[in-house]
Image 1 (cartoon, rainbow, N blue to C red):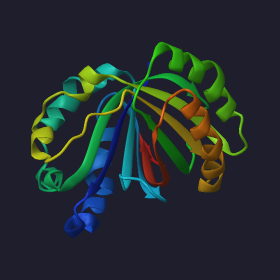
Image 2: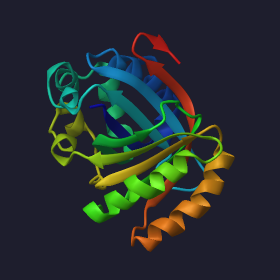
Image 3: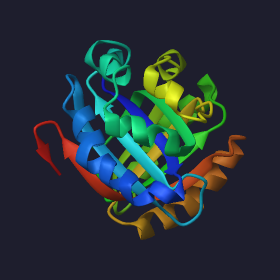
Length: 219
């Protein structure tokens, strides 16, 4: 089953430009070049929210992120990576299983709704009712439910030791992709009250795509 690694965060202002160059010239190509990685995408926040950037990597299976070439790379970072790692701020990294994926088209705009709690009853409501309804909305290209794999999210590595902060990832995240941000703004006006009826108050942020790479080529 496909899995996802997602990273929310910022960079310190003094290296912001270099940080961006590192991401698309080295970091994402390095990750997507590893066995089992399918795609890597980086986004910039639109509107409010704590985290200015979002990076999302799709892999063949969650086991790809717990050993082999990936962990070898985390424990042997390049010189440029060693220079950039201490500059991450507001950093949240999570490894997620993807029990729900409706649609296969990547949108140019994405909203993440990080859920502070998840129960079987909430998951059933989302899976059977709310997420299928979202996927039918005009302009929505894909809807996913990510569920955190906490054991995989907390693996100790050399790269992790270089960062100064790393927050605990929430247990689940709803991810909605759309053709543009206006679609997401209208949609969220309906989604957030519906989630509050389930006693869920998500941390919401909207992002636009900066760049993407698929295994074997750039998108």
